[in-house]
Image 1: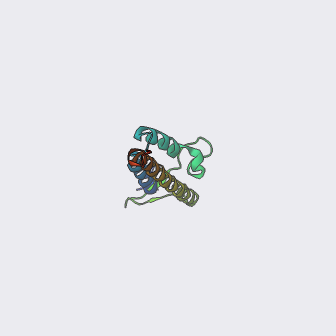
Image 2 (image 1 turned 90 degrees about the horizontal axis):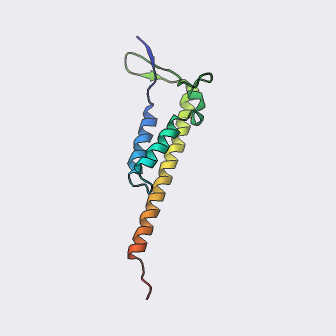
Image 3 (image 1 turned 135 degrees about the vertical axis):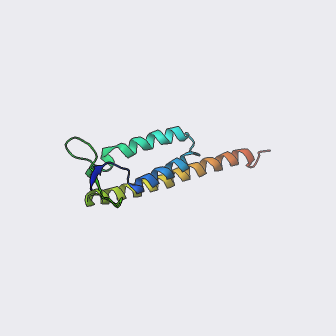
Length: 114
């Protein structure tokens, strides 16, 4: 028995978990990060081949009885590229967090002028 359903790819789920974990310390807050990333993940322009061209709905994923699923190859390739860009953005977020922490510590414990 095969069914067509729309589920989140494991790579995308892993990326979203990383974003939430890093977003806890983000200067603008977790709510800001969550809203921005949800919009980005749901935007069809970030992975156009994963959406139908006519009505903008998600390409159905074929699921077999053994719980394995198959995604069209163009969509898979583009999805992996988009996830790579997302992981780069997570590293950028980590850099911003480290810079904020450094500036806070420098301001608090830095050299005092006499």
